[in-house]
Length: 154
Ligand SMILES: [Zn+2]
Image (cartoon, rainbow, N blue to C red; front, side):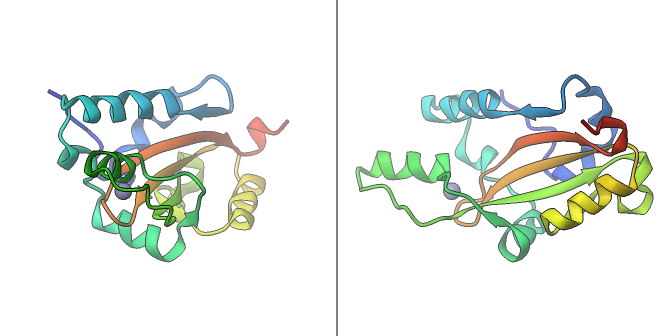
């Protein structure tokens, strides 16, 4: 049985942030693909993956960055209903930052690239998590994490 231990991304990430360790950018496409396949196979219920926290959805709606990627669960639904894929951009990217160095800002959403660059210049080390969330179905998944700060500057 598939269990997600992170229904609210921003509450539960902090502790494991530094264990991702190696390399600066970690891509979660493989995990995402496996999860979508599990939904497609019926091993995981749609409800279990379309469970975006209301706060994440609010952030996605107001400050989320549009992406050309389509929501895999909406795409699956279109495929199953045998209707042409809906190209409406329903997926948004929301970036959260975590790290002790950030103090009170840890766990917060970053609104712009400039703000992220500013944090990277001011702090030694923290992790930015980019989460994708669908405004229509509530799908949410970690897209990418990145180690930032002057300790990791190239
Ligand atoms: Zn969707």
